[in-house]
Image (cartoon, rainbow, N blue to C red):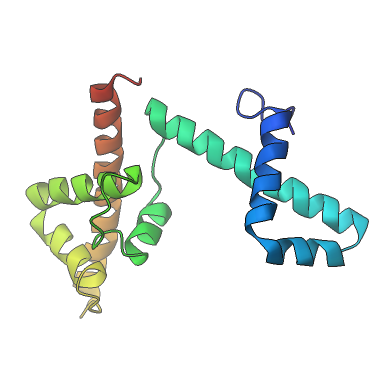
Length: 158
């Protein structure tokens, strides 16, 4: 594992994280125990890779090297991120709120399209609104990346 994720996670951390994940999800343990040896190995390595990937993302976010994708922004919106007040706990929700505020200032029609779909849960009425939503998601992603980069610079982490 350490060779696959150099500088991200060492073998002990991967092992401990895997054990912790398995202890937290007894259903996964049951499923893994039902598998053959090769499948068990792949499943456990998959869990360790997920842990290493999360470590890498958290470190990149902390350093200001993290960039949101439009897909991640959509997922965050679909999970209720725009209606969440949890800005102090999750950096991505903070970035979403800051990015949305900046988008409102820069392009009200894009912000309105996003709010209509993801805050008020209303469908887009026509092609024009769908286009504004698509462009708005791209613009929001850029604003979130700008917010993340600026907050990292302000905190001195970069």
